Length: 268
Image (cartoon, rainbow, N blue to C red; front, side, top):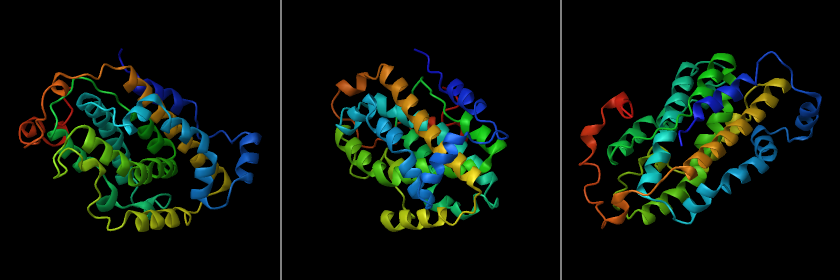
């Protein structure tokens, strides 16, 4: 099966033009949500968030039913998403619609994900999820708030559980090689940082219309994650190396020569 994630994000993007006001039903729903933006995002997206967590791929992952190949596919897919997200954030770091949430040292993942890619043999599969973010930056950069909320706060929370699950399931080194994506060395306390980030989100000045679009965009981010999980579930994930004894010692050294800066996945 050839994954068509890029086409999906483009179609969703084209169905979300800037100039159209939110339908009356959406405005009514927005008025019934908490004024606190983070609480409103959580309340409005409870159902789709639950759907993402209950996707078959994620259920298996959380049970420790993850192979090296399936984990590599996840990292490849997320790498492109985070590269796109962080490129758009960098372009908008001084934009008042996002500047308050600019924490590159604490949150940005590109460099750490490149460390992870150096720890795994390359994969020939590639699922791209960056198209939506590129369109968001071009049309409505304020919607980056929704993607930052979904990806960064999600990794600070649920990602820490998945880190432990992956470490145990794949018998990875205690040094943490191959799991840099889940680490935040510049964040002393994930709990306190999440509280800070949420409080800053709640200070962002938004018209009711923009606020509703941000809430809707968070739902789009969850839907894209669900689509990604569905595609990953359908791909063959068994790898010969999963059948061999553990070879995690010196995990990164054997593959580091394959990774050179921006060319991490360029040949796949």
